Amino acid sequence: MTDRVIAIADSGRSKPLPRTGPLPVAGPLADSLGRHLRDLRISVTDRCNFRCIYCMPKEVFGPDYAFLDRSELLSFEEITRLARIFCSYGIEKIRLTGGEPLLRRNLERLIEMLSGIANLDLTLTTNGSLLARKARALRDAGLKRITVSLDSLDERVFRAMNDADFPVAKVIEGIEAAEAAGLAPIKINMVVKRGVNEDSILPMARHFRGSGHIVRYIEFMDVGASNGWRMDDVVPSAEVIRRIGEEMPLEPVEHNYEGEVAERWRYRDGPGEIGVISSVTQAFCRSCTRARLSTEGMLYTCLFASAGYDLRSLVRGQAGDAEIAAAIGAIWRQRSDRYSEIRTAETAKQRKVEMSYIGG
Ligand code: SAM
Ligand code: SF4
Ligand code: SF4
Image 1 (tube, rainbow, N blue to C red):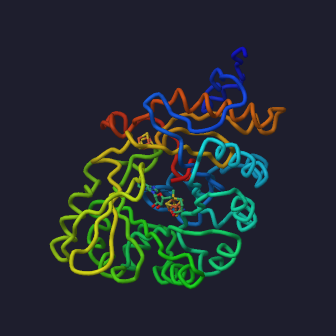
Image 2: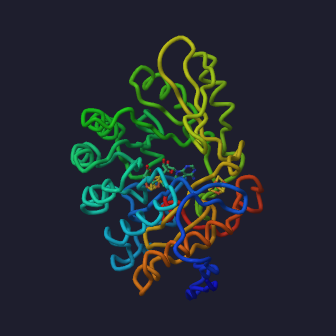
């Protein structure tokens, strides 16, 4: 069968789709560095009701910021179609994200549609603000697990970080509702920024120890081009482990599965564990098995990419499933991303897509 080229207009942020191989293509898919495609993150909205200083700073995401128009968003049918095609390559896990995914109207409907895909680990990351209201419906729709972001238990620190004056108690309420709905154990993401919330490291560990939930400390990253990232603002995971370990001794735990980004640690003197995500100080590109689908249907093969591949134009054009599968296969096979391994102060200044657009 002859090779074909699917031509896509280069809009500046979009790369031309590569030459595809024979159709149809399915089964495990390895990139140019031998990494298999295993996880898919789907951003369902680029909007958010928070303005976290490390993600959507107000100076950039102000009242005049041009978010995507409704017509540009992939519909639930389009997302589900793409998800099924991705799953034909052996994707085992899909995470819904954003922006704030719970702002997308009728998200439960999408969850219901995706949970119809066999053997899929379906999860979602949220800021927790709407979780108290929605946890039960999400669970009923088929959601199995959830991750809630919470950067501090200190009211002043948390409000300063979300920059929307949102109170801690409401997020805790959301976590409790998720637990009551059967979504536990819950992962709690805390981005640690030097001089901002490093004093919240220990209180978070103390609070959630014994709850069954797992706090995951994330190194502040240079995603996007608007959060003013500096290496000095990063609190290395090794320091987080040392600080917690001085009060509550820790020991490492084996990874749950290949490609798991969090390094796991458990308390030596009783139940409970924590995780650290060391994307800056200990890059894990070598085992990176994640693809990202943006709200408007662009495929990104790295969180730090500056351009993606426009799958929406295929979905809205005449392309059949086999043709879309072939395009995804060709994109993944030629992938060679390893940004975190080659990060420097200079690369940190480069133009990249924003975290709220591509999904964390
Ligand atoms: N709005 C949802 C939330 O906050 O959970 C989902 C989207 S958010 C982009 C996904 C995750 O990325 C969150 O846990 C957030 O804390 C994390 N994140 C955002 N910007 C980050 C940065 N600059 N460095 C590290 N993590 C970041
Ligand atoms: Fe919104 Fe999540 Fe980004 Fe915070 S981290 S601004 S909650 S998308
Ligand atoms: Fe994967 Fe890119 Fe992050 Fe490396 S920098 S782990 S390739 S998303």
